[in-house]
Image (cartoon, rainbow, N blue to C red; front, side, top):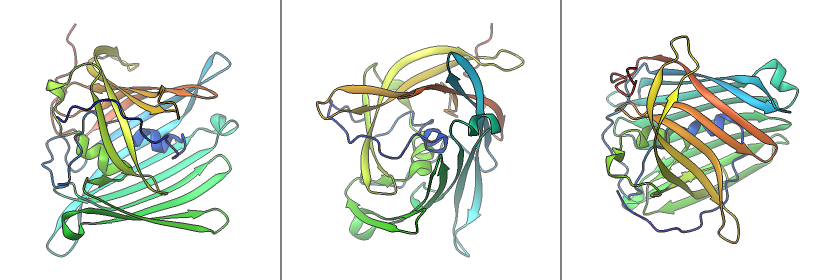
Length: 287
């Protein structure tokens, strides 16, 4: 892993919709590299993860909605296969009174996890946008052509070319799941480049260590977890925690809990259903 010292990253401008949040759930580890091809050690076609989301409103926790993350094998051409990952996140009717959210995201990548195409249709409050990104690799570099369509019909485009690999919100989570964080030390920072629909921005995760988490399921399952924080920095370089992730300490690297620190309150999300996981859940603690 590439160890880094603190360098202020760009503030997050992608919004705080649940769809965007779940894209960052599995960023357990990442070393930026000019080489995008990688070996998938974490997931397989048919994996499906279901979540329940909660929001704190005047000291009362209410159910805010659900999200489903699914990965399937697809044919890219007559002779080439790849993966398609989709995420659908929907706020509940009760939560719609505070913040309506309907997010649908699709990402396509090669079997070597090279990003190819990304689309996000997001209705978040009164805001509606459609983001698209097309990825190519001219001259050994990584290039992202992006387009954002606004509710009023206006379109904004951008093109970025970098030596480092550029990811979209879903391909980055799938790529990161195959890294082994066993050499991490508490406080290590992980930087990566992500297409946000407007431009490519550097994001930062910090490793916080290991903790146990008791799930709110019928069996009260206890997981051994890796804990990471997504942070942003103000103009003076001061750190602000945005999301804390609890991720299974096994080969699946599945997010089982996240805590969100918002300007207008706090929120949580919990994994409620797992289907088609590639590896045994060895992170479950036997009491």
